[in-house]
Image (cartoon, rainbow, N blue to C red):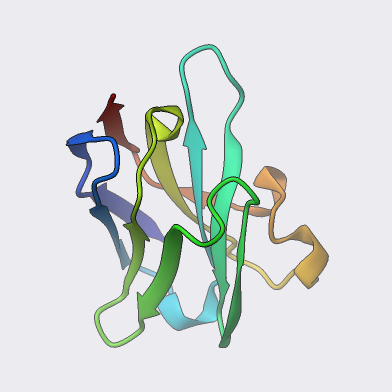
Length: 126
């Protein structure tokens, strides 16, 4: 699976931005998809995930109620709609695909994702 993330940029606090991640290669619909982010000097962290079969998405507590993950299997694309952005949301955002079936409990684990996009920078100014 090859992943290409896009949609990053500079946005003011309180604003919105939508990230997209286009997938090619192995059947997109077979993969649980996730978004992660990495701020300068910090470890990469889980943001959101959506199961291969759809269902209720999972979110990090820090973004719950502000971010929405969705997928369009017909377009092989996963999205991350980010609203009410805060300066602490500034990071490089990565999309990822699990590549294999894992228990739901591992959806937030970086190590369960086999394929990663190149990352897109999101900068939120105060």
